[in-house]
Length: 422
Image (cartoon, rainbow, N blue to C red; front, side):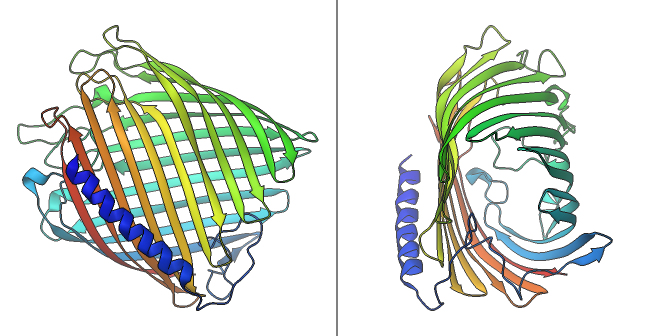
């Protein structure tokens, strides 16, 4: 814990220095941001991709090639190994936009090859389709996402195989928002499934069939616009996690269900401050009688503040209860706090800083993990076709008590990426 506090103190000093420097720099002329724009996301004519016309739609292809250095590839201080990797990330999107609808289909890849530690090579792929349509005073939104991914070594559920654990994550989302006058009404739901592949180990292999599961979440929201700048709402959400197998390899019944009650606000103050934040109460019930129910306060959301036309600050956080397969734990209560800063040093150079701290409380176990994440980087827009992205990332996990079975690690990464786009 002391090591983590020391690292956070160092990180906080870096954060304050970085924000101070960013806010003091005035080498670019101040610009007005459009409503809901941020420094990182606003349009930049002359540097944004034009895309290619395909009938009434436009096609946006790009590819990034990255060189990455990691000083703790296995995220384990007991077997610390460093290595460099080459990462290739192609993406293609087909979009259609009008004042009353938006449609997009796309796909991307994330392929990494390490110089020495070939067991850490991976190939991730994502496909998606989404659509938004205005219907009278309402909006209908749908999404379909198909993902082939790998489990990161920093995950507490990682089974420590000789190769990475692969899994599929597929989701369908549908939501309808209705705004009659000053009222705000919304119903939305998501269904998905996780399918884990077997993991190779020195003793042969581990079957992950007991980790496969379906999940379902539905929410009902009602609110009132107090002014054009903000609205208040109340929301109830219900969810269920159903594992394919009644019991996992250690004899625990992992399926669960729960609910969350929220009171929140939506903000949009003329382009300067925008976002959403809520507080509430959540409860989760587990099928296994050996697991006690998990409940407590919840919160979540993200607020962006455009301090000037050159600097955007972001504040966010969440408290949730997630599923886990850690032996003896029913779930993980995850608390996260986040801060970010983006600054336009030049019209084509955007600097970024991110700080995240968190806590993982393993329900039904005497285990508590503290986490820290720091990122520094920049994006240099060479022209309409090329970007240079560079940065540094730091991650830390500290487990208490030390004999609770969790891994302690510090990970430092450096990366340099060239992105080509049309």
